[in-house]
Image (cartoon, rainbow, N blue to C red; front, side, top):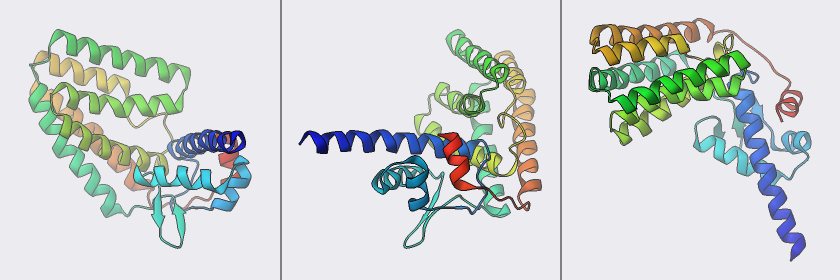
Length: 234
């Protein structure tokens, strides 16, 4: 009985380790679009069971970070330009509504939370922490939706943000994150001042520029040594 419990515990630990390593590799742009993640190779690279690998891949697939195909396996997403445009267009529409809802109506507590978040982003940039920069940059937008008192919108936006984070990592991994803390600070100032046009323009310009960079690189072909990269990421 103890042996089975130990094995289960080890598999759970391996599951989390594999999940974290693949997520990190994806967000750092280390895995090429369309690359296949082979269970056997991953199990060897992480020195764990294939069962632990399957759990991690299933979780990543459910989050949209990987594409799972029956009888074929797990693949890094390979979105088309049309797929990319559709997601960014959805973000433009959703976030325009959020800006309209918040502009000039942020409470002092909400402003403190937003400014504290921007400072955290700045610290992450100075520290050169890629994973933290990406996490904080994406959560800033979700935080705006949460402050607007729209949990369902926030949940939907979180899905859109996760997709654009992945697109950015796959096709434009040149910067620490897909957002600038300075741009976020300017947006917060505009919202606090009730400057709707400035806030809306700031948000739209940022998303337009990000989309343009990703689309410009989407036709580039990259290759990666999967086992080496994931072993390093782990």
